[in-house]
Length: 169
Length: 169
Image 1 (spheres, chains in turn blue, cyan):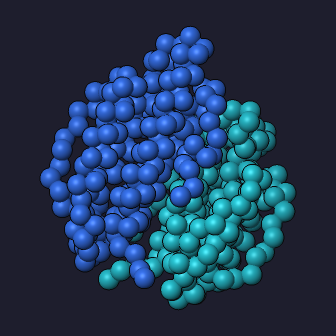
Image 2 (cartoon, helix red, strand yellow):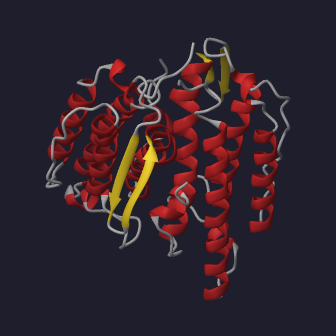
Image 3 (cartoon, chains in turn brown, purple):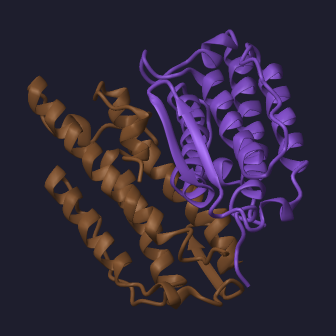
């Protein structure tokens, strides 16, 4: 048996978003228990020029979504990055997961060498879909999920590695 | 074309270790420039009950190494977790990368359903190799690489996402 581009991306991203939702709930419960304004966590950053918690969720969402769009072939659903509450972040995650679930596993078959152009503020990079997934999307996705976890841990939310990895299947 | 367990693990881990080495060099240069004792970074943590920078490198090393051992079938090389300097961390990374490079890509072929038993302090979990890689090793590996990056960023080391993702291939 071998793996497809689908196998190594969207199911793992959906699972990570489920874990991330549970992590955010623990963050919210911690804030309530300590009497902290939710913004203390939502706007928290590891250092001033890194994105806050909200931005980490937005970037994880975008990274996952664009695999579904660029490799899975579904139409892009623009998201405004206007989340300011925990409820907003849960809605963003739910909307992203719905979109990921709309991709048929077979839609990525045979796409390994398909050209993917990634535009950034500094220009554009052309990848094969395979290199885009393995060299950009997967590490970038886990970067933002881990950074969200790290921000909450840094703020004292009681989390452990199993919250990040999720229950064993 | 489809992907093998090898394709989605060891080459990406080797690349991430190259990026991590460059990140550590920037950390060391920053400490020297600011006149900081290297231990200020090496022993830095995001919160007291998380592992310090050295431990993040050790866990990334272990996570990658055990894919090579448990799925790639090479013999385990015990590592003592006694790194205390940047030079020690570079040596640990080099030793780990050598070990990953010793695995023949074909050694993981057909191993998707092979049983992998993961022992932890709280018991043991049995995975298929495929679930071990996708549901544990890959997310856990990027967790520790990202946390190393996050610790250095939090301490003020000038790093950007491209340091984590590495040069575009």
